[in-house]
Structure formats: structure tokens, C-alpha cells
Amino acid sequence: MAHRDQGHPPGVEPVPVRTGPVAGARRRLSSAERRRGIVLAVIELASEAGPEGVTTQAIADRVGVTHGALFRHFPDKGAIWAAVFDWVGESLGAAIDAAFGAGGSPLDTLERVFLAHVAFVARHPGVPRILYHELQRPGGAAAQVRLRAMVSGYRARLATLVSDAKAAGQLSAALDAQAAAVHLIGAVQGLVMQATLFGGERGMPQAARRTWALLLDGLRGSRR
Image (cartoon, rainbow, N blue to C red):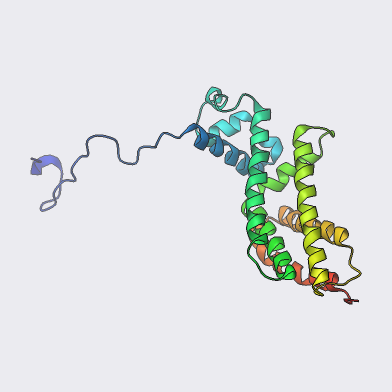
């Protein structure tokens, strides 16, 4: 039984001390969870310090492991970057797939895909910085090949959607579907550049809606 002379105010019982596992103790992460944490740390660091600031020591510090422990999950830094590109492909792909699969007219779907792409970048501003940094390297790197394949597939899906909107009479019959797809991707890149210059990632979804209205005028044209 606790005694009153232990510093507790009169009439207030002391809080019982828990035995066993410490409350709030960190759960031991599985290898898959730790790998995911490392990938997300890379994306966060790229957002804060740019890809050049993503050192293995900075990654280890961010996830709270030793430098040596980091390489128990990945054999080298190249493997970390490969995992980052895998995550980007899967996560952005899932967001885009959900937008494509939500139904509606081709033009409604096109708008939803555009906004979903921008929203993903707004949530993860480190992603475009990593991608652009990788594209500046000499050609032929494995990550570049993967990135080009990902963008090419996305562009083809957008072009098909534009063609469907043309067939439905929602867009100009004279519209070049391939050029329109490139323009839509370029519009996302333009919003990213503006956000990078002025620190406005949070405002990107709102800016995307204003940009879509302008894009739509160009895509519709005269509808001949």
C-alpha cells in the first residue's frame, strides 16, 4: 500500500506503477515495415534537402537506426533508390488506377486523373525532385529505364482516354491525342515547378483545379 508521506497530495491516490512491458514501448518493426520506412525517409529527405542531401547517414538518422543497420535491409544505396522507384511506381500507379476506375464519362475521368496526379505530388513533394534528379544523369541507368517505361505507359493511357473523349464528342475531333497527353503531364510538371519555387505544395490541388479549367478550353477547341 502506498504511504501518504511519499509526496502525493492529500486525498489523491498515487498512480499505480505498471509492470511488464513499458507503456508506449516501440513495437519491433518487421523487415518489410523497416524497408518501407527507409523508402519514405528518402522521399521526406528529398523534399527537405533535395536528392543531393539524401545520404545513407541521413537516412539512418531519420529512421532511427545505425548506419550499419541500414545495410541489413538493403545491400547498398543503389538498392535503396531502386526500392524508392518501386514505391513511386506502385503508389502513384494505385492513385491513378483508382481515378481511372471510378467511372463517369471520358472527360470526367480525364479531369479526375489529372487532379489525382497533382494530389499525389502535393502529398509527396520529394517524388518529382527525385525523378527529375534521376533524369539528369547520363542515359541508360536502370532507374531511368524504369522511369521512362512508367511515364510512357501513363502517357499512352491518357492518350487513349483523350481519344475516347473525342469519340464521345466531348473534345475537338481535330485534337492530337498524343500531344494532349504530353501537355497534361507537362501541366503537372509546371505546377510542381511553381510549388518548388514558391513553397506552395499545399496549394497545388487548388491550383490544379484552376489549371484544369484552362486546359479544358484548349482541349475542347472548336469541337469540329
